[in-house]
Length: 281
Image (tube, rainbow, N blue to C red; front, side, top):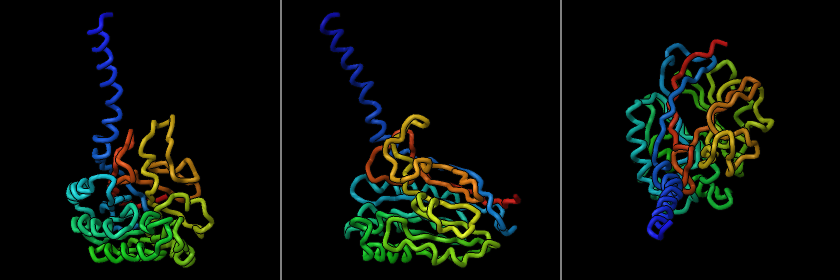
């Protein structure tokens, strides 16, 4: 092999080796996936059959990636004309003053439901060490100013669909018993819970129905069936998508719209578009 051929081979191998890095840094983090699926819901009123419920999670507005991608994603999401929209936490990365100002710029373009829009907080919304209650209060105030009803260990019914929202598992305010002790199982209930590890806590009071979560980002980089190296949950089954908890509860984990770090591999950012149907089981 002469020198010219050798250098050509080295260049080709370098290009091949660099492509996965370039792809996971500059392509997949901005390759939005609208996941469309049905959401069978117990006790669903007939007038809500076929209505659209959109889940958006983990915006992570901050300095680690271009959050204009989120605004662009919101514009695309509005074309689905959702009836309900739920935001399942981690609106910012650290909760400082700059991030909250940037959050205001992003949420000016927020997707809102025709009937109702609800939100819960994630661990990042509680600032340093997930303990900054001033940060979480500020973020709640911002979001409510843009038309999002925040459910902090609380529930609220809209048009016959009852939304129950938990504060984050890692926060000082995690107290789901405040709302689960007197929820009405005869209603059409949907629970919003940022961290899916809460599913393994003794807090559910016989609840049967859907739990919508985020937090994991689907691992951000993974080879399905082989490896998911970074997963911020104790229960390693809680990666993404639909999980049957086998006790009447169904869990759905959204893969996140934003990211703490701008890298994704085989885990595209997600907005979930559910169609409500009555669960007749």
